[in-house]
Image (cartoon, rainbow, N blue to C red):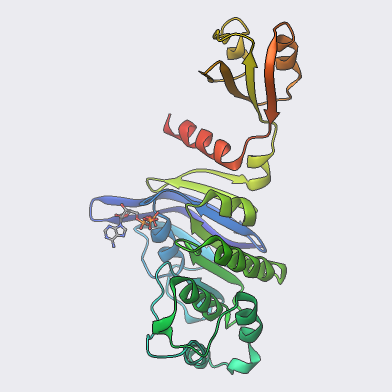
Length: 298
Ligand SMILES: Nc1ncnc2c1ncn2[C@@H]1O[C@H](COP(=O)(O)OP(=O)(O)OP(=O)(O)O)[C@@H](O)[C@H]1O
């Protein structure tokens, strides 16, 4: 089932095109990453999905239903962790959760908050004003899960957090996915996408550059070669590397290039030379990502 569907979604702020012609589909049970630099249009897209901002044009449907107008019923099926969480400083974590539970007409004890707080190592007895940024995020996340939403939307969930806390949050998110939840989150942290996501959409200047499965991005047929010859000569032309790779970077005698197929044909050509070092690796997500970004610029 398609949980999020947008068709040619656009948002203008005055003359500023924040989001442009964005079409996305997120399937049930997916962890879908939405990645792009600052100002790319991630938060604006999320705000439109949550019916907090009105699209200038285009269409959104959620859970297979038109989501053009604010609807309490739809909002109840969605959890949201904003990038900046507003909390009532004088309350304890527990009081804050109890308030949110009441707003949803739930009894706090019937929710999973205890187990989640234990998993995240969060002391709910302390006042929020004493909470670090990490603890605020943890509380925000538990709060966003209280009503067991089918879709959880997170805006930069781990931004500014130390790696230990990032891991804990990611573990909790993975657990939610295993329980059947769909997750859509924005980030500019590539390692987070690699650890957590099934698919990733890359966005820049409000435009969708590409949607790709993370497995294909880090795996696929691409191979990154790093070759050091016995001398410092540039052998790009001699080897005919243009036949295989769009670009070869030659630095300190090392030739680095990425090809789109199996390594055999390149290895055959290299066999004629004296080689000091050779590595052939799958590209990291970062390499694939940067390459796609460069291609998007053309
Ligand atoms: N309320 C607003 N009024 C005017 N311009 C806005 C408004 N909200 C966003 N913009 C502009 O729209 C563009 C997209 O902003 P958005 O916040 O969606 O990007 P983002 O990808 O979430 O970036 P960041 O990671 O910095 O939050 C930016 O140029 C931003 O300045």
